[in-house]
Amino acid sequence: MLKQRLITGIILVILVVLGVLFVPNTAFAVLAAGIVLGIGGWEWAELTGLKQPDITQPMLFIVALLLFALGIYLSRGAFWPVLSIVSLIVWGGIIYLLMTYHQGVLIYQNNKWLLRFIAFPVLLIAWLALVILHDKNSSMLLYLILLVAAADSSAYFAGKRFGVNKLAPNLSPGKTMEGMMGAMLGATLWAIIGAIYFGLSLADGIFFVLLSVVTATLSIAGDLFESLIKREANQKDSGTILPGHGGILDRIDAQLAALPFFTAGVMLGGIV
Picture 1 (cartoon, one colour):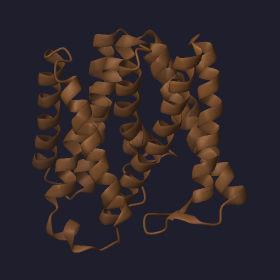
Picture 2 (tube, rainbow, N blue to C red):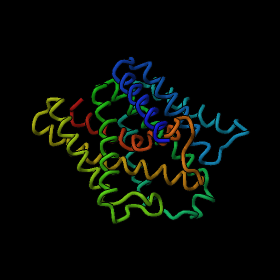
Picture 3 (cartoon, rainbow, N blue to C red):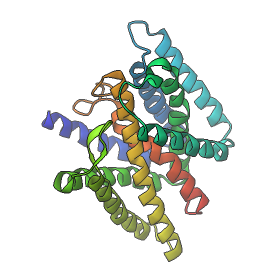
């Protein structure tokens, strides 16, 4: 399993770097829609009860996501300011759900539409932020992807070495407060490197580092929210498409929360 996971991980890194840096934005938008909305949407549909063998419902779910994406894309970003605000509201609500979660609560059993509905703002706005940031500065997008990876790795090692206090025992028993502190430290170090690399002024650099640390912290909410969905579905992984890693959602869960916030931040801050 470790060998399989390592091989898949290396292939993913190569494909992501090549895709982000060398694929034209229009093709990138289509490719990202296929991965995030197509495959990710399929996994989300199955986790929330729209399962095979009747593929009609998950297919309609994906078609709806892609049609919304097409409309948003053709608007050429006109809806981005509104959608970025919507994203903040949605993720604020998600954080509330995470803080109050207990497995088996009736709100999810009696209202299966809730988690399905949340897929639309979460997946669509993350996809749009991905496309916009890629168009503005593909190197900045690669920085964000590596920022979340650095935070996740730092959280793992800090939690393994110092972890005592559980962060969200009802959702992910392995995550600790100490791990979150490690994630913030790792994000800070990576952000300083990023600020130097992008040649930012002192004021912009401070803003960039703070934005990056908050983004990395918020990415944990994305990870936990996918854990919530999987727990409600009694599934370990969102899918099996990535050998040793699970599904697409298992790999992009943290990015779903990070992308809209970071993209809005660097645009408002005039960094891109």
